[in-house]
Amino acid sequence: MVSGRDDSSQGREGSVWAIVVTYNPDLEVLARQVDTLVSQVCRIVIVDNGSTCNLAGWLPGCWYGSVELVLLEKNLGIATAHNRGIERAQQAGADYVLLMDQDSLPQPNMVAELLRASRAGSNVAAVGPRYLDERQNNPPPFIRIEGMRIKRLNCQPQRSVVAVDYLISSGCLISLAVLRKVGGMRDDLFIDYVDIEWGLRAKHFGLQSYGCCTAHMLHTIGDEPVRFWGRRIPMHHPLRHYYHFRNAILLYKLPWISLNWKMVDGLRLCLKYVFYSLFSRDGLSQWRMMTLGVWHGLAGRSGCYDNG
Image 1 (tube, rainbow, N blue to C red):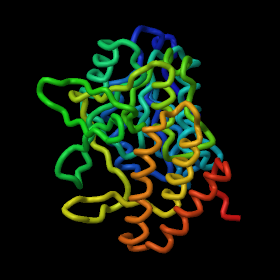
Image 2 (image 1 turned 30 degrees about the vertical axis):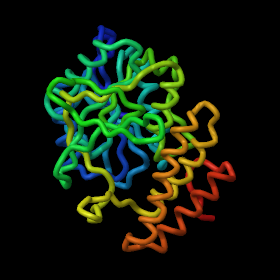
Image 3 (image 1 turned 60 degrees about the vertical axis):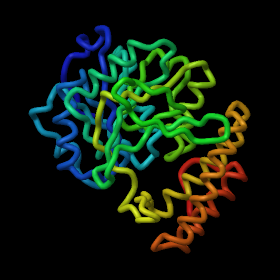
């Protein structure tokens, strides 16, 4: 671990610690992210999931005292990495954690806007920014399921926050008080549906997540998208879709998630199964891994995928 600044300054009201999870990151992109974050938060904890690159040797001296590095012995998944970072922030007396993917780029006032939105609400679970994938024409809408349909909520001039079912983990601001009530991320999910499960669990506790329209971030979803009927659909590696389908099935088995949510999300899952099987360049591999994910989800298997 590389660390610096005295933690006594971290106990003040509103102190935010950023938790950045990395796995073989593009170091140039990561440096841009840290440069943008370092003036917005009290401390940055980079939790590395067993990368082959030498992150300790890369860490610039100019960040000494503002950035620390936690090196995990192997890839333990995004949920465990988040939990390790959260534990570190909690030990230091932080008030909030900001969860970040390695390739997301927050805009200069993002954290201040998220804090403002979080403090303005009541029973707030988490707040997250409006993000833009530069490969898309427009920012994706926030999502909420109402009845038997998905409601896509675009930001409007008169609406600064939007109530949602869940937020993507990157850019998500959560208070430590909420995490003590709701709990951390589910380690056994490893990756995919981790943020969805946490958001729905927080909702089960009577808390509400919000999208913040005035907080902005650049963020890339998946690999190079495929054009389909005028839309650009994000693609993922077959292994990623294994986790996506397995963890969706695991969530559907939870008794406290509403039936309508399971049905609407389940329909989306079926459509994805057909689309990725038929329209991916590696459709057969996609089909095999999605099918295996469904099977393992039904069987109750979780954790890191073992192809043995």
